[in-house]
Length: 270
Length: 325
Image (cartoon, rainbow over all chains, first blue to last red; front, top):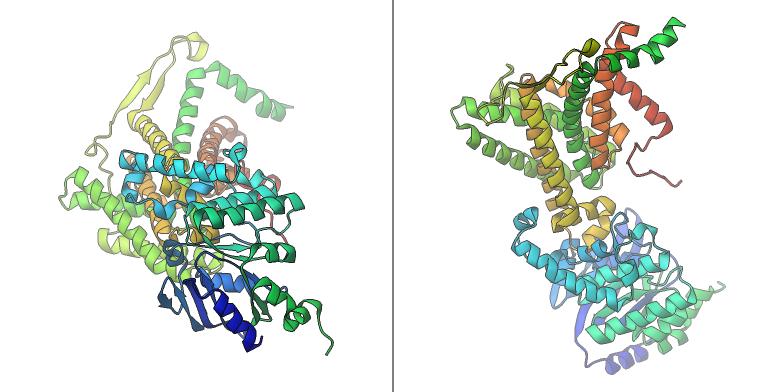
């Protein structure tokens, strides 16, 4: 990527505050390098796409951000606090929520319970009270139920409220998973291929939800997606990875025009 | 012909002929089954939340009971000793989580199983060191548990229409009631509370549970504590029927066929499995035992388990395990 486009991007979005900054992060498993020296930032209120061919290190990147993987090198700055690594619990309590590439729901539980589990950290009463399910704990539970019902209405999944999620069709499972992440009231929402395996109609619904979450709740979103049409429509800025390295970063138009990106996707004869 | 008659006809004739005796046998079976179910319950709690088969559950029963009796013998009042024993189980849970589970997180299950075997021998040695190896008498009456028995004499239930005779130990009735209360409480806890939801979440998907901010360490400590309390109750009930000694640990292995029957992940499974094994072995011993010279009781449970392993390996209530290659 050349210097001209980088300054152009910087100029265009300069007014926004940086929510998360990844600097010189490298991650390897044994001798295999998954991510090499990647830096980028996510600004408050934007929709940031991370794209790249299979095996480019996109999911590894998300795992680094929410603390599943601990990078060997680099610094992650979230809300102004720099760390060499996150822990999942820390990330969750700091306001990072995520969904997974291959739906990770609690299959034995109902839609309602799945979404309620997203409120774990927001329930403040000491667990001692919850052992007895009595008094303050009970009131708290009811309060949170109200919030969860709002999310259910928002995602239009009222009809499957009580259904065990293991039996739901794939598209709805993805929606419940989004609901669970929203229940955490996150500042940063990481979506790992939110539309994988969906038909056109489901994709349109999901796109609408993502845009609404972004505009109504002001949630910052980072998403990995393979459907280029969706990426170009939804995102404010795109970072492109290939073989664990960053090859481009900019607005959708800039990235689309970038020769390295075209080569990475179409292959290039050497 | 005689053999077939003895297998398929005579036992039932005996049952109808002396209904009071049959009820008595059934009751013994139910009581035994409840105790098996309690031990199995301890296994299920830990297996559900962490996928670990806790080999030490049996010794935890002995250890909990020994702590209780040991404290009482040192002059601590019975109720205080009970509370302290609960405290010791909490401490044990925290230590197990901190020093066994946490360092071994993400290791293969077989490693964790080996760790619990290690824990078993540690607890045996530690228990003997502190409380000595002598069998002790459970302080049942000091804890307010009833003793003696209730005798029922239903009209016309004895042989040939004479009055029947059924004798129920009060301690057994208490065991049944306490077990029922505890199982009910666990069911509410699992299904209705935040912690219960977190427990089920961890059981379903570790990664997803982490991503919503559930702390695995806290959850593991809680399940080990719950299993410890179940162990204490089991120890009191079992100790009241025999003595409190390390021999109890062997009986705890009866929980294995119960688990295979009921399924490793199901609380109702542990209860139903326990009752089936308990009733099955008592009734089998009394009515069919003489055919093979007796002694059915000690192996019938394993026989049933073997049949289940062949035809329904996930048990009656367990989740079907499908492993993709």
